Amino acid sequence: MGSRVAVAGGSGYAGGELLRLIAAHPDLELVAVTAHGNAGQTLGQVHPNLRSLADVELLPTSAATLGGADLVFLALPHGAAPAIVAELPAGTKIVDLGSDYRLTDPAAHARYYGGEFHGAWTYGLPELRGQRAAIAAADRVANTGCHAVAAILAIAPLVAAGVAAADDVVVTSASGTSGAGRSALTHLLGSEVMGDLCAYKVGVHRHTPEIKQASGATSVTMVPVLAPMPRGILSSVALRPSRAVTTADVHEVLAAAYADEPFVHVLPVDQQPHTGATAGSNSAQLQAVVDADSGRIVVTSAIDNLGKGAAGQALQNANIMLGLAETAGLSADGVAP
Image (cartoon, rainbow, N blue to C red; front, side, top):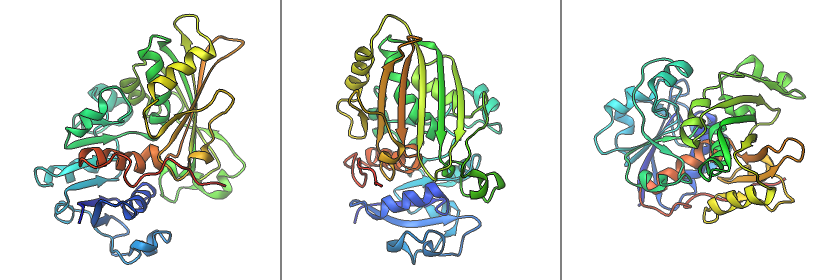
């Protein structure tokens, strides 16, 4: 018998990926899975890939259903978590995969999300300096946004080392369609997406303030791109150097920052990150160069948006919160081809 966990929002893509990881975790016991519109169905009906959990019934989402767990994962739409959180028993640990508790600035929350501001929880990115200890001590952790984690991992060490200027960062980030959720929306139909690239929410993307808050950047231009693939994120981050640097310099800063991290991999200088190489894993791949023409630093970053960008990251945080091995139930190896 391991730690008892429950998943709210188990019918979505992030919830389904989280359930896949929990099913193979050596130290977790799944005690409840909830949903809204899919309540009453089995996981085998909603997620045919989850054969080991096929007979588990999706229950209506309520604190009563979730409250018997040691730790609850909330994979709910924005605005839905606070009502559940308010009713869960004191002492229940929570990892929120949504956006209700990520931002510390009420004005940024109002501008990018709207709705009531409920305060900020401990931010769930262990690779940030000092953050692993904060997560271990927390009962409430706000999981990262998917575009955000790909960008933050690229930016934070360079800004902290004084190599890159904090006030001039441009992020172009392509994401697979699962990042938009599982709703049946016209612009996500296969016939609309295949063979097409489209920028969206340019200049107003919700992950912009999160990237600034966690990376140390003070000005970010964000260009998200919808890519014709089911999962994965490839971010290209351009930064103005704050002093004269070479490719070897910036590569070494990133390599030193993540030398002991099990899931963040700075690639050899002759390799570039691939989304396919991170698929199905909790890994992030990074590469850094200095552009030969402009002199700007360019960092490329690849993750699985459902892995390090959502469910894998959530499980990594839960492991830390529960005092388990941080890598338990998680793989650094992607699935190929």
